[in-house]
Amino acid sequence: MISVLLIGMGKFGRTLGENLLDMGDEVMIVDKNEDVINSLASKYTNALIANCMHVENLRSMDIPSFDTCVVAIGEDFQSSLEITSNLKDLGAKRVISRATTEIQRKFLMRVGADEVIYPDKDIAEKLAVRLNSDNIINFIDLDAEYSIFEIALPKKWRDKKLVDLNPRGKYGMNILTVKKTSGEVIYTLDANYVFEEGDQLVVFGNTARILEFTNKQS
Image (tube, rainbow, N blue to C red):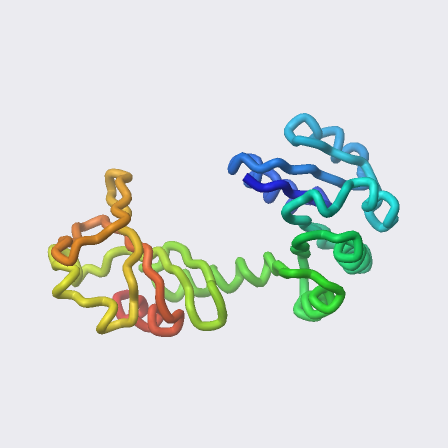
């Protein structure tokens, strides 16, 4: 469980807040719109109507006490930029800010954001990858070269042993877990594990190599 200060309760902020609550986190929400806060306040640990452009309002929130501060404002970049900078000046441990363009991302990093999320770009990239391979269910970029993918079992792998397929040696692909159609998750695979129809694989490896592999299975 972590403590999160979530500033900006538009569509993105609300979705993020709901997911954090589902994970059991302590979330304080802030927005300058009174109607928005009043409609959401009962769900959260704390809720505050405040204009975070005023540094005194931020100072009253005890910024260093939060594990993470998220600036989820997408429409007013000037506000996002100033709030990000002020949060760092007030001792925020970690600031994650939202950008809508690459230029915004660069400026937010310059004023101190520890991480900048780019929801529209991330969604577009993931959709492009999925559209190019029917076998890819989901994926997470870890850095510029490596990712974790959830993929459907290649047809040629059915009824084959892991040791015989040798995915690490042939494709540079490490199989982390297998999800069975029954819902069971196998976290540790024996070398003699036999793949079955319906298996979904969670794999780690070089992004380009895995994409090349999945495209060949389509």
